[in-house]
Image 1 (cartoon, chains in turn yellow, cyan):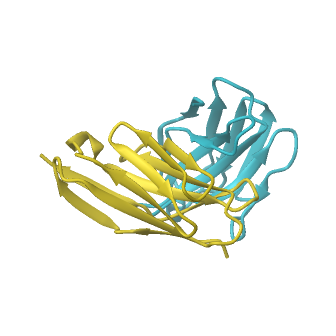
Image 2 (tube, helix red, strand yellow):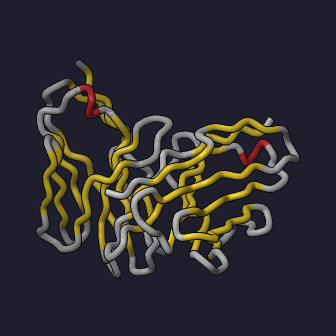
Image 3 (cartoon, helix red, strand yellow):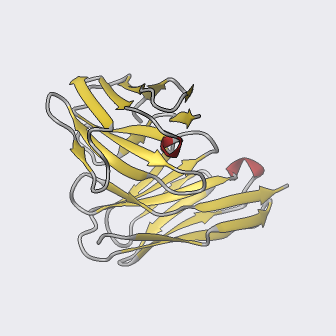
Length: 109
Length: 115
């Protein structure tokens, strides 16, 4: 069964304190790894897609990286508005996305 | 990215009634749309894949007679929760796949509360 596992479940950071979120996945068959941001009571907002090991993508304070068995979402000098739940999802070749349980990120001013 | 709308954004209904949720693609035609359910503090669980002009494909454990999906046009898919019960209370979210990619763009979600 295709699986995506995220850690930590929750993370509290001081404003400006950089850190990384982890997403590990079933190794076989991954066609794409996706990162989304979800605010409370809203649908997920697309951030990044990664397809091959070594690939990196950046957007403002966020950078996503991919290895052969996991992906990281690095957040640099976060601000309170970066507080949200960050979801990763894998496409294992059948159009469907398998989501992890998310990391709830809180940035304290 | 794609723009997807959902209506209503929230609905409260009595147990035993049916509720219809609409999902619209606002910027391009979507032959495939997806319906997810999300319980509080849990992740998204795919319920079904909706294909324009054909029957939806349901995930294991999802009752197709309870969650009716219609995708009659390239811009509209509907999910009807029939004979809703309190355990159906959840956040329902649709998504569409961007043409030529495997990226999904999500709607804002519909909060269903069954009393």
